[in-house]
Length: 335
Image (cartoon, rainbow, N blue to C red; front, side, top):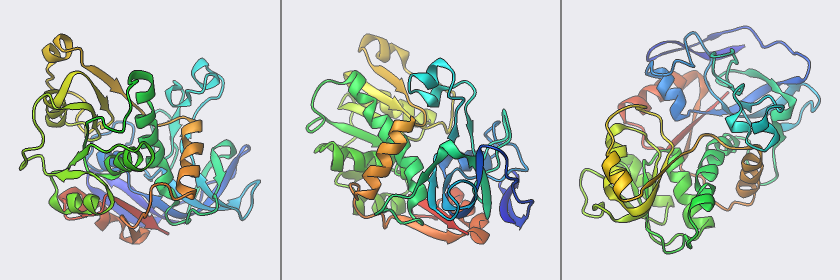
């Protein structure tokens, strides 16, 4: 099969690789589309010790069953593989399973990803493509589930109505835009701001999102102690500092991004003003299933902000995301 292989830092090669073998309890998918995730970019930059080259990246995947119990069916994949036996799995928190694996990783166990013509995955992680969801757009289900899980965590910590709550979303990538769409179109948030330093991407977000879209380097909207809730979808030291400065006393910061996992942080304000900081990772099976219903019902509106490229041109797509010349919040590679 042909695959886009991560071979070294900032290097991807489109080449022949061995087809995956059919094993008990799994199916082989003929990949139709696979999205480029921010975590794939972390690997591309050599900053993810769970993704060591050579490796086929990619975990946002749709396609057809090539070999398996649903032969020929159009499907979308939940790439998060859990044990189904531990306390976390039994209690519906599969994303916290200590034995969890993800397609497109080779630590702790190798699972080749979806930037290829074929990929293997356990049958329990396969969902038939719902009516109303295009197979080319279906890889957006995975990041949408990430965004949905982050938004719905608020129910555990925030009892007020979201509608008139002042909310800031930091980052105009796919996760940031999807959080904004869920907040505005499903949760009816009327007081939403999204920040993004790349003006081209910021303008793309503004086309589809009912929010104030601002460049954090040139605005007067982002003031200190202003927002009730802040979603940091970037995870840089500078975005965490922005979040802690901008959040109100008693406010909440939802931390999603992992671009820069360490750095200084204002724990004095966090403590003296009772700021709640909530980490969020991936999604549960229920989140993923709910996401498919949301997308099939078109609740997030037009997905024209997705850009499609050929898998064989994937190396250039990574380069353009890296150098900031790509305006689209999401690129999906088509095989």
